[in-house]
Length: 358
Image (cartoon, rainbow, N blue to C red; front, side, top):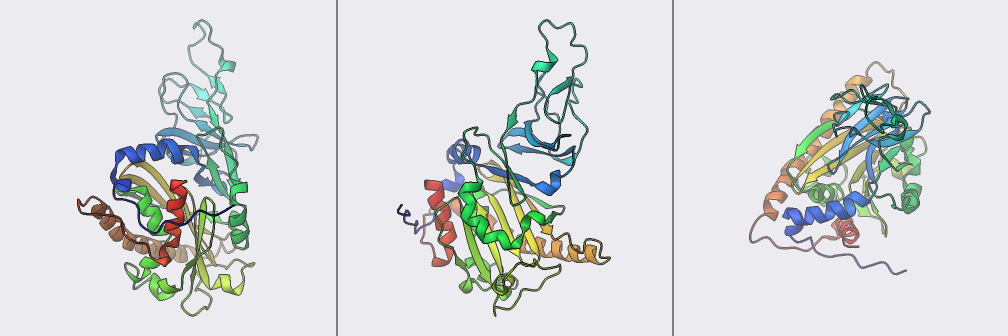
C-alpha cells in the first residue's frame, strides 16, 4: 500500500476557529476514536473510579467487585441526574444524589426507594449503559463508537518502540490541571514538534535537546514518535531510577509520542509525563499533566522533595508553552492570517494533518 504524501503547509485558520469544524470533529473523529481517560493504576482495586466527561457525555470508569474494569454512563436511569461529579475516588456503589437510586459497580440497579407501587417497574431490568474498554501499556481507553476497530492492533508498531520503557509498571501521580482557551489541535501540534525548542524553550529544553537534532519516525498510522536526543548524546539527568531495559541511546533521549486524536506522552529514562486533553468547545479544553514514575524507591525519605522539583519543572515548561499557544490562537483569528509552509522539523504535524484528513 502506498503511503499518502505528507502535507507541506499548516491548516487554514478556520480549522482552529470555526464552531462548525469543531462540531464535525466531535461527531467524527473525537467521538468515534478510542479516547484515553485514565491509567490502570488509578483503577487498581474494587471501587476505584474515575468520573469524566467525554465530549459532553458523563461517564464513569470503575473497577468492579469481580475486578472487571467497566466504563458506564453516570446518568441516573430515573430522572437523568449525574451520579458523580468528575474526579477520582473510591466508592462502594453508585448512588444518585437526587432520589437515592443506587447502582452496583457493574451498573445493575440495586435500589430505588418507593418505586414498589409503580406499574411495570422491574428493578432487574434496569442498568447503566456501558461502553467498550481497552487497555494498552497501562493506559485505559474507551469509545462512543460500538463498532470501533480494536486499538492495540493499530498500535502494534508503536508498542514495539516503547516496550523498553515498561510504562505499564509506572505509578501515576496527582496531575497539574489547567483550563486553556485555545483550539485543541494547537496543543497537539505544539506538543509533537521540537522546532520551537529554540523559541519559548531557549533556556530550558533547547539546552538539553536542541531542535536541530530531533527527528520523527516514518509512520502511517494513528500515532507519531518523535526522538529528542541530548545535546552530546550522553545519558539525560535523572531524579528517579532509570528503566533497566533501555539502551544507551534511549538513555540519552526523550521520546515524544502522540496517539491520535489527543493522547500525548513524553518518555524519559526515569519515567513519563502523560498529557490528558478534554476538548469541550472550539476554543476551550481542560489539560491534566500527570507525572508517572517508577515504583522503585517510593519509600525514599527525599522522594517527595524530588517529586516537587519535577512538578515545578514540568509546570515551568508548560507555562513557556502557554505563551506560544495563546499567541497562535490570537493569530488564527487575524483577518489576514493564511496557511504557511512547514519545516522538516515539523514532520509530526504533517503526519497529524494527514490523519485528520484521512
